[in-house]
Amino acid sequence: MEYVHNGGDTCIDCRYIELHDIYRYMGYCEVKYELMMVYRTTCNHFSPIDRGELWETLETGGWLYCIDCGEVIFFTDELKLHLDHRVRNKLFSDIIATEESPAAD
Image (cartoon, rainbow, N blue to C red; front, side, top):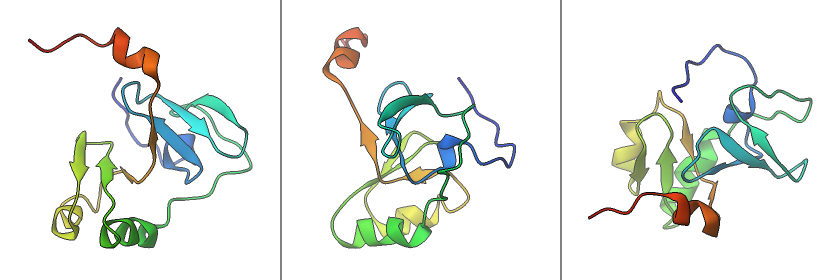
């Protein structure tokens, strides 16, 4: 599923969403404690992602994920290349999704 940003306050742009690592159209809401369809959902808990937190994550040895490119970011120099993209510092996975994924041979 490809996403075109319409400027709205959808879950995909909210700091409280942990995106699924395989099914990127789904996310877990830390406020509602439920799975959400991140491209269509809006609510009154919306809070935009703080870009400062992204830089801090890298500076403390963490990593980020670019939703638009599907790339993992480890260094601040890499983050500079993704400033106009959707970059997240939270992902979640489940054991069933990895079993549903095709194996690489």
